[in-house]
Length: 153
Image 1 (spheres, rainbow, N blue to C red):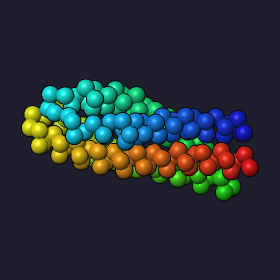
Image 2: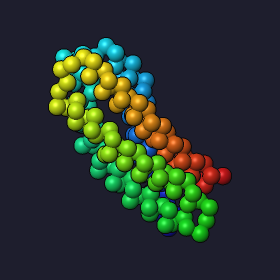
Image 3: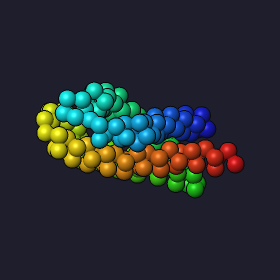
């Protein structure tokens, strides 16, 4: 059972780290260029990488959810289930935010925006939503890291 716990938690840490890195990249490297983007230039830094990220992160999220539920089941009866439960809640919340709200903006940008004011308004809304999502990813990463720290102690 211990090997299953460690395997599930390691998968969760790896996936959570990928999400955290994605959030850091967005906040510190992509968001600062928002005001410089025009209808002619926004597709390369936003549309193409977002499409690639979606193709990669969607199946990864399924793996995360399976590993998380597995770890929760393995930790039932102890207090160690709490950190993976926080991870699960933040994974579900960020997934719902993505699929129900952020994807609308992704599709609008993918379709093409010709008006500079509309582009900036869309990017601003996208930035605010992604800041919230990156915050959820940070909590997710902190939750599984806490599990490792508490388990090690």
